[in-house]
Image (cartoon, rainbow, N blue to C red):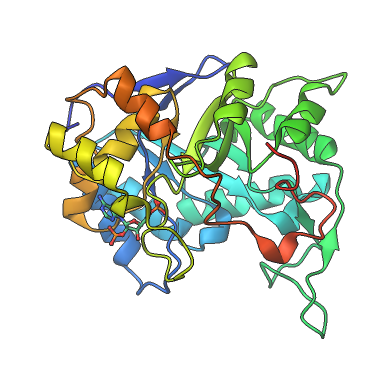
Length: 323
Ligand code: A2P
């Protein structure tokens, strides 16, 4: 994938297209001002055209600055870029949806985003200052918002031209069904963005989404190698992935990314390191055999690196169901 190379895309149910490989822009670490700008500019220079962001990541001003700089210097046009943002949990009330999106657009200094997602089906009480509003004892202030009403407000944002496509994230099957069964549904969610990698391959959810023409976008496709939690299995150290990688002269990271694009899953690995950013794009010049795909499927252990345990008692917690 280099400048000028045609992007590998999947069609969306609303007629738009999504590049199958994107650059994640979230970071668990407090980054110095300017780090995101530099990384996103480098990403665009390397050839990324799909950038995955969110209101919650707190750096959309920098992502926007990088996109605008690369438009200004002639590297890309606005229409070459596919930018995703996400509606945060404190804005799920229908009356607040557009406000959150407008804040995003103001930070980006762009007129529209390509894809806007409901970040989580779980609501938190509205708050302008806190992403995670809590009471004096630290308990999160949950809000049980009707996600179908939130969806109708998302549809209005598309009609207003502020966003090209709309979708959801972290929804389980029954939550997707709730939206698909809305009697006056105007637009279907084009995608469901969920954690997805060989240790959580989301086989059943993927089959379901494909049957409804919903694209599955996989976040944390590398198994969050930066998470410093000793109880987590380290995906990129998996011997099977290493073995397959050696055969193809590819790294385990490239193998897990190739695995996803080959099964029709959009991947959005995050890296702010130029070498790894580039390495993660070099996945279109080889193919995994059926046996290798099966062997990688066999590594599944339904392991969530992001179980959101602090939300288990939320009425809309998505991970009680099998999928
Ligand atoms: P860095 O930004 O230093 O490259 P995930 O997308 O699964 O959440 O993983 C993101 C993490 O994986 C980041 O911390 C990133 O670190 C690291 N990473 C990205 N690409 C690779 C790669 N090719 N090999 C190893 N680690 C990677």
